[in-house]
Picture 1 (cartoon, helix red, strand yellow):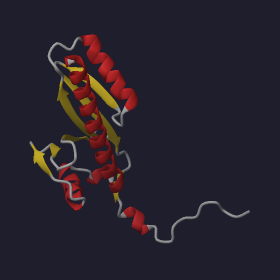
Picture 2 (tube, one colour; picture 1 turned 90 degrees about the vertical axis):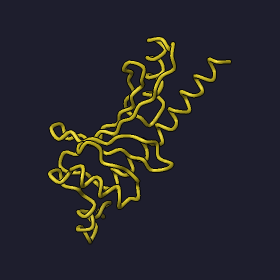
Picture 3 (cartoon, helix red, strand yellow; picture 1 turned 60 degrees about the vertical axis):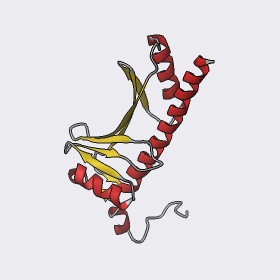
Length: 153
């Protein structure tokens, strides 16, 4: 019986794509973003703020203990939006967009995307997740704007 899957001949090419768990740091993530031509700044030595034109601005933080890289950003909600409306808006975001988690705190809706890195992280996966998250945030911004414009009419 012929094998359906075969191992690549050059297995070392895969390892160069991997950032080992112990090597995941703000500096190393910053270097990866530079290699991927994604503009950003390091803030307060524990987070990165992505500022690339065409990519929705957001923060990247590392939480070593649960092995999570967190992508997050927020939108300010319109004045007078009730608690039920906020909850419905978050539920819609959680159900329909490429943003794993949305929640409200005070007058903001926060968007959050955890990326787990136990046993390491594939570089291209992180870059792809950053782009997907930013794309989802753009869609949420349009949704929020359409909700505001729809209420004004």
